[in-house]
Length: 166
Length: 258
Image 1 (cartoon, chains in turn yellow, blue):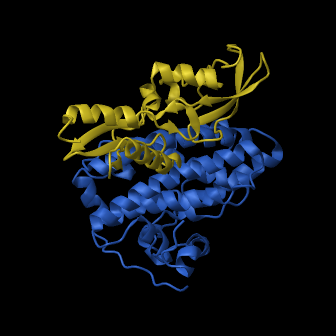
Image 2 (tube, helix red, strand yellow; image 1 turned 45 degrees about the vertical axis):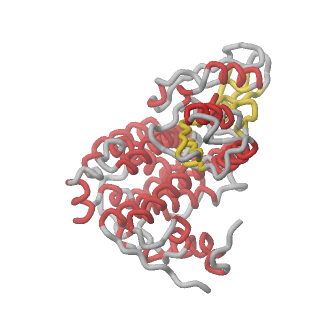
Image 3 (cartoon, helix red, strand yellow; image 1 turned 90 degrees about the horizontal axis):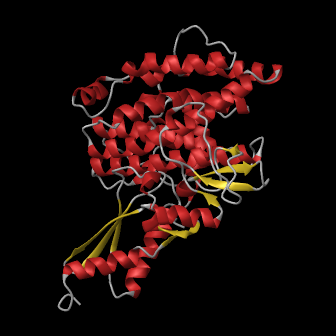
């Protein structure tokens, strides 16, 4: 392979391949949409992929690492390595516009812009992903995964997940 | 117990990292004990989520301690194969869950500290500790907000919840002083720019705590005698029981994996 393709071409193909891996808990988002995919490097024809966890204890990281290796294997990249990097710390600001749109369509309110996180009793305004109303309230600061909170729309009465600003 | 404890070469940096790791693991384990028992489903998820954040922080810190020690230990050995006297966590964090008010007061006192501490540690000269701090800081801020809301809800709630919240504060107060203590080894790390002096955060911590406790219509105990010992491995009777559960699988089936 190395004879036929330059490292730059290999890297691009490896990146595109890794970028197709989805978050096992929010399968409409790829790890590229999330900003979890940080870097892809080629060394002596071998691929090394750097990913970063959303939350310190995110249990999806092992699964994501495995999925990346399998996806690369299917494309002929053998013995790829996945390493975890912590710095710079992941933030929802890295989520792509495309990712935000996909989240909303999936029924999860995308993260608001950062800013009031420091406020101890801060007021947040989250738009209902179902009906678009801003008349919503928080049910629980914590949801079914580390990255989500549970909200309810007072207009259409539907509960929904909110992808927490982080 | 079928398998012997490991020995750890505790250089100042290894010891310091283990203290931080043990804090996160032990509080995370305590929170996990609520799983399936919390008063409401939302709170069950909240406690488990906070526990998961802490477990993630612990794993990073144990891995780093093992790397710095470089004696063949790893995160699992450090968590599962040290006995109670080798654990270095704060006494506050090993205290039993008690009622819900006690769990929340413990979380509140610690999160108010961790929030300040990790934020300061983001400037650590040690790149790994600074990276762990940058992640933990965001998580601690969220834990602080959650536990602060509960302090107010309990304190400014019914006569029963008020009494329980006040009892929790009174009971745990003597364990808060240890958060601000350092020993000679740790002061060396402070001087080297690797760690921060927790004593420098005490007045700010007290201000946050007093604000929330005031809003909750509760009273802070007047600062008195403070209990210490966890940092040196002198623990309350509760930690041994916690570890016997946490470690039972690896002690009984050494090296067992998923």
